[in-house]
Length: 434
Ligand code: HSE
Image 1 (tube, rainbow, N blue to C red):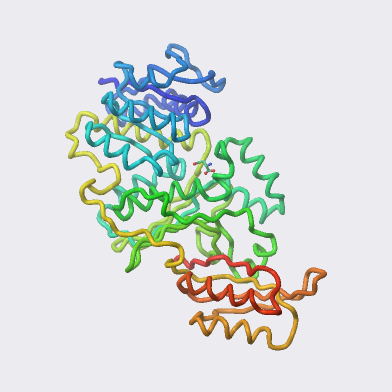
Image 2 (tube, helix red, strand yellow):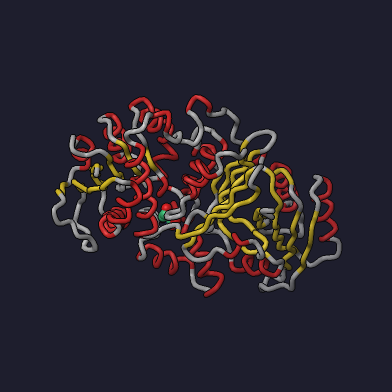
């Protein structure tokens, strides 16, 4: 049986999980691939006590793994996009295949990395970069290859979903839940990446690229975090039959592609609205298949390792095949990628939840309604609550039909200019996902 030799760079949560899964399931993997996958070298700053590294050479310099003539595949699990970029490019230049879980690296430098890999005739696997253990890259690139994909929407940051779930179900404080997510190894090294939507935007950038056949364009993604969400809005949303989720949305429209991450109201009966804790889920809508849903653990040691190992098995099977028999790195042939524009957020379209804290005067609701109607914004429902604060302001909660964001920005400016409105209008986008 042929042996495929692997060098792992980084033996933290995902690196340790990868080694353990490769060792524990070695028999199953060989039965599937007809190959033996052997870890011959590991670059790590320290030994992971959860791993058995007996018989494996341990070094501290990851670049030595990229240069090791005995290594066929370099697994990059060190994170970040500086050293990791150098490592991945060096490995490719040395003719090695690469597996990475590094969404930040691919979202920002992926076009360069995939071009270099194609020139060198090597593969770069990145299933673990999006939605942890869910094989959503494979599903979109291969399983849905017969479709023209219309849109996708996903909960693709486990930490953020864990925080929102605990806040809603247990009434826990934001900081407290974030610390737990960090202790469990879910959160990014810089947790603002999780709560400000940057991590989700990295992943959405990759998903949009393989769904629509466009280059990776992280710099065009619109990103809004969850740090400003209040319990009041979570509760009002529930009263209206919605849950608030931190959603990544990529949609093909007649004028370009929407690429946006933001808190979103979703009808509570949608499966996606019921994805809780650290779990992730991605809905993909294709013209032939309709809507599909992929659900599973979006972070964590072995779920992410599951995806890394799946890439290793693909590479083990395909490394001797002609390059043009392999699945294209970004799902579409590199020369067939489209230049369709990613739309600025002002040109994107969605429905809206608005909360206006207004003085309780006759005629205020009529003023609100006329500002919206003058801009062609159709109100779907309106709810007025009792004043909850000492200030005597009453919350007016509105749901609108879909409208281009630029019109909503203009309407909010007009609402905030009303004498009866003295605090900023809260605006959260709404997606029906049907
Ligand atoms: N910080 C990420 C998350 C890890 O919470 O989803 C997985 O990419």
